[in-house]
Length: 372
Image (tube, rainbow, N blue to C red; front, side, top):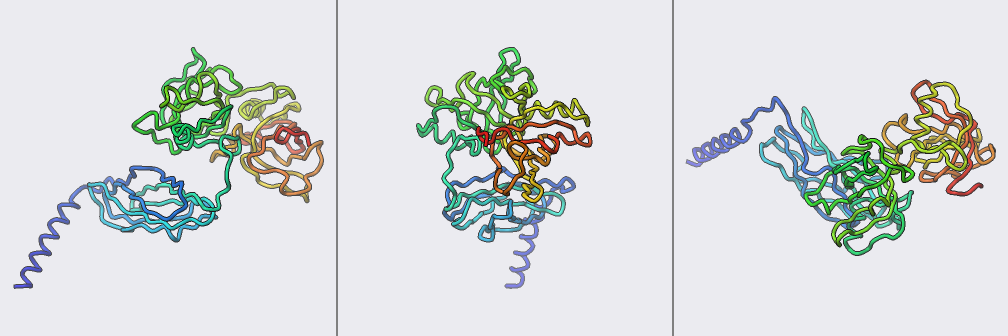
């Protein structure tokens, strides 16, 4: 009798399983409900990760950079069958006693996959001054501060991903759009940061209605306000769009009084091709350093208009084998760092017709506003 009951139970379970799995997986689908989980607490905890997967899946947790420790990030269950219904797993993470860490949580199948980004604050994180060119405000952080009546004064730098565009008007010369940390727009507009009627680089009028789009990384500089006590935004016509994906709208004359921005320098390189320009001045922010060599006395690095380094190096300006002030040699490897604002004098060229570059032998004119 017991055997009959067991066989009957197994038959019923098989029928339920067949009913659940009886869908077409010729078109495998995996998608997540969120793209990022940013934790501002260094303490241990858990959160629910929900995703869709219509075929068998498993979870892989991997570090997003070389310094992130992820062995204490565990997902339960870590594998399962496909389903037509949303699937929820529990992510358990330990306390982070070091610096902020980043991880990628991947949902993997034999055919396709999806991933979310996990970040967690660390107990040893340095205290940052928010809103500088080196540490621009994250939109979500700025919204949180402003709604808590901690409204920054003066001009602040804000960098985020465009989540929604309301209007880019060449007629009025300004643009209105929203920024979030991950590019996902919330149901309530006021939960994102609104860039309201901002000007273009150098406070010039916006002239192109294709200036930016959803998904672009944008840095804005200007004054902010809590409009009507509930809408965090830039003050009308009191902010400028410094860069879209690291590059600003072309601006400047290449002179000491009005150096080129990176956008103008890249344009000039592409116009000139492999023929050197005359000596020009370019202003930008160091976004990546390849090498500072005291042995050879030079440095190779990339500059952008806001310090953000896009994935494509050839979309910004490479400073190739540059010299120190007055054309002197670099004598130490720590004389420059990412986030430094520089003005450089040299000639521009589109090296190999692919790489916008300031030629070897260029020299520093200003470093963070100083001449030495």
